[in-house]
Structures are given as structure tokens and as C-alpha cells.
Length: 260
Image 1 (tube, rainbow, N blue to C red):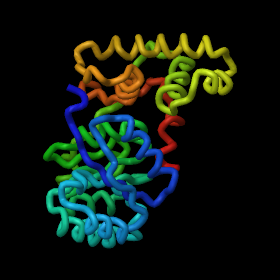
Image 2: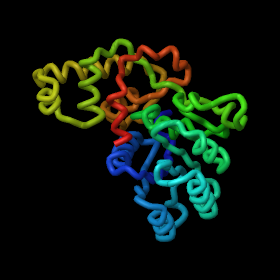
Image 3: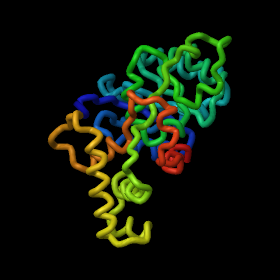
Image 4: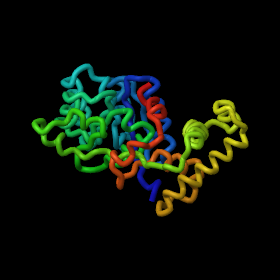
């Protein structure tokens, strides 16, 4: 059932807009809860000293640009593991960089993802990464060749986002504005140049389409329709291949906010 997972997440990101965008995406998903947003490595260790272990994170989402070199990244992760040995570390990068991907493997991190591959699916990616295999996102495969570390060659690939072919561009935009960004119908109407009534019609139809793809999924009874729509709109599809969704009309413009 959706909602049973309760992962405590610590964010360490060099970009102001990026870290607060990720925080907002995770806050919408009941399976993840951000316990701290760090601006520096010193912040992290100071925060850990001030809090009991029961409040410590299960997952650290780490921007690779917080480390000037792969060696610095290794040192930071090793230091973090001396404090929280079982912590799951998910690295986010702006572009595929082999030396950082290898550093992720060598430090037994759980995943190395590109930010724009993940986009709004960040909560789903964190939940999905609770697995023994090292994981990468699709863009990382561009740097994987047979002669490099087999742990990278054999990495599992993050599933693509769920495809909703019935969502028109206008319905998708209304869902983006009203559900993801939390705008009122009046504000979304101004943004899209239509009436609030039209926006409500778009959102209602969007809810119907999203629900039609999720008939077998159970949600907590107290979860609002907006929460359910958000989770469906940002869902991954483990049954699909990336080639099968190349023609998805959900543009990258909606995911670039994670990069700030």
C-alpha cells in the first residue's frame, strides 16, 4: 500500500533552489520525510550530534557538486559512514561523470542519478532505490562501457516515469500548476489564459485519467485526492522500458527545477 514507507531523508545540496525544490517534492509524498536540509558537511555532523539516533536519516540525497573532487566525495562519504554505517546514499549529478560514478560505487553508495533524469520522480526514486543493487538513471548509461568496473556495468537502471498518453498538454499543465505547484484555479487560469472553470474541468479530467491507470493501487483512506493525483502524476513505471516512453509528451521543462 502507498503510504506505509516512512523514510527519513537528509538533503545536502549546493544549489539553493535545487534543495528546496527537492524538499517540496518529497514533502508531497508520505513515504518520505525530510528531516534536515544541509548547506555544508559541517552542518550535517553538527546536526547529527544535536539529535538522537532515532531522528537520524535513513537516506542522504547528496549533490556531487558539494565535493570539489571525487577524492573529496569519497572522504566525506567514509566519514558519514563512521557515524551512520547503514545509511543509504543517493548521489545526484548534473551530467554523467565517470569518476564520480566510480566514487559512488567504491563507497558503496546506493545510486548515482542525474538530476534531470529523476525530476519530480525523486520520492519514487528514493523508495525504489531501497534495494541491494547499485542503481543509475538512464542518462548515466552514456558513460558505461564494458571495460570499466563491472559493478557499474551491471547497475540496475531507474525505471522511466509512468506514461499517460491521454493527458493533453493543457490538462498536464493544469495538473502541474494546481497539483504540483499548489496554485489556486484563479492563479492557474491567469497563467494559462483560460477561465477558472476551465482549469477545474482540466484538473477533474486529469484526476480521472490518472486514476484510471492506478486501479489496483491502495492508498490510505485519509489521503486527499490532490495527494493521490500528485503521486500518480510523478510515478515511476517499473514495467516499462525507456524506449517505450521516448514519445512521452511530458517535457523536461517540468523537471529542470531540481537543477535550480
